[in-house]
Image (cartoon, rainbow, N blue to C red; front, side, top):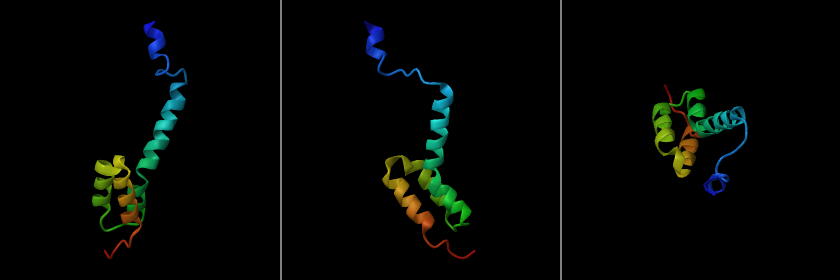
Length: 75
């Protein structure tokens, strides 16, 4: 009886597929930080920090993406 209760939770998929999905999700999660570093944004460390700490909320991710796409400033 107990095994039927948890059967909906556990997946029989390959751990390789699960690992690949996790890598893709992490890459997508850090897109704002990658953009900021590639553009040599003046606030790249702050954008990375915002992305790491509040990116999970969705709003933090959008704010960090918009900020990374804004004018990078002078060196």
